[in-house]
Image (cartoon, rainbow, N blue to C red; front, side, top):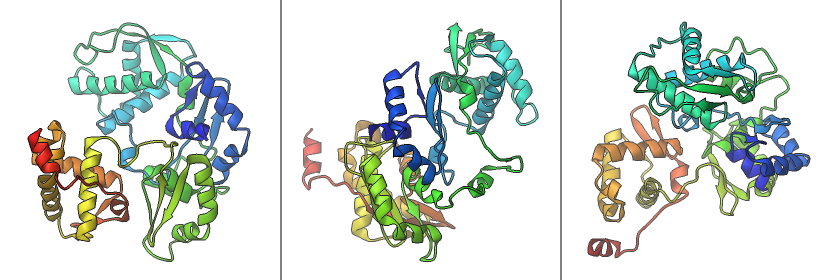
Length: 364
């Protein structure tokens, strides 16, 4: 269903910005799609006359789930402060940037030390305000954000859209004792189905891994693989691929959401080539990061002629860092003590060039 993909791909669908999809999804949610979200991943669908939002709560927190444009933890603190500030504003109410800054400083004063006379802190605030604009949490009525990081005297007139009250996930139970993200991972309300973690991991993570044959999530996946496959195929045109200690949601049709591997980006292609070498080498454990890096560099030297100019000329250190981070985010490798373990996710796809690609590349 296209409506399922849209809900998975978008943070929310605002009626004023996308009326066609808003009403299309609203009609589709009258069917068993809403029951699927509630019964299996146990996700809430927020629907009113302003927006539709699927609260896609993950089973585990992963680095790739963060806000891509944010760079430091303080960005998230400032975003929370902005949300708290907007919560006290009426829909359509206007306010100045200087007023927002004064209140944000007050709100975060007991948590982080922020000084907006410093360029780094103003830059952080600009990232947060730009993200808030992208998500329609606020709008600029007069002024521009372009020079705000460089000029502390920049003034902007904002308008509160009213959407901020729907941004955060609303909890029905008391979560005051929860102190960090790991507490949320372990949090399980009395009426929640523990098997929801399996669906959350399948739908939001590149892979689901389990350590032993007695792992309850692995047992559940194997036992109900047919019914799980049916729902995945119905809504996403994907298939469930199960191995001895892993499971994957694999896409082959037109319906896709989120980021996919492999993609048309050069880094993805480089990693696909590396995966091909890993498959052929049958090497599954590297005793150190240095040994793993040496393997990567051998692959790079073999295929570099086919890379884009950016990656052909990139320094070894930067390239190794990008490859390692990419493979780790995609759950293809894992660090255990000092070793690098190659996971099943690295063995599902591989890339290769024609045997004569080097000569053709050199001719060009």
